[in-house]
Image (cartoon, rainbow over all chains, first blue to last red; front, side):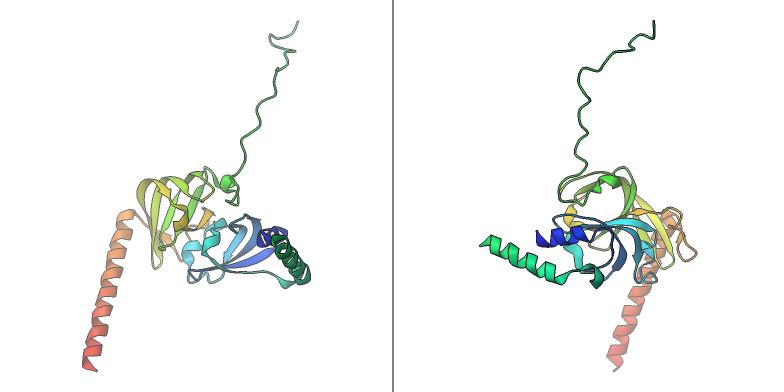
Length: 94
Length: 138
């Protein structure tokens, strides 16, 4: 559940999601769930010329299983905290 | 004095509203009864009113149309009531109706889009044929 908790701290931040079908979308992270399905608001398609059919989308739900990458602004991530949390969680698992 | 029923206290508070979302669907609750466009894994686009969903993001779409895009035109073909299995779903978005038609994307009738699609696929076949001829020559 580490990454679920992590993404919950990013709600309201601007992120970019690249899907397995090569479409990339940017938007404000609205919500995330345990499957890492994400909801974005104020969606913009990165290559709008290539995907005109997605131009009319305001906000969207993206299924976690089709996501390839999520880009997050590095200023919003405390990597030390994330490492600590990871170690804590793996220690708990033992 | 007063109107009949005045001063009457409801004996029990009204029941709490049902839970707003299933755990693990990033709350599709807000999209219920909205017109949405769904992109499927095979690249198809469905437009319909989202009536129901569950924790696997299976969804029910009412008054569904399949939206075909051919170059700078698009058209909707009516399908009816659809249940989309969650694992076929890539993306589901609410549509901004003011942005559906743009100078670069014009809406046409179902018949026109079918015709345009047939033309496009015929062209593609022709191109494939030319490729083969070229290979034979070399």
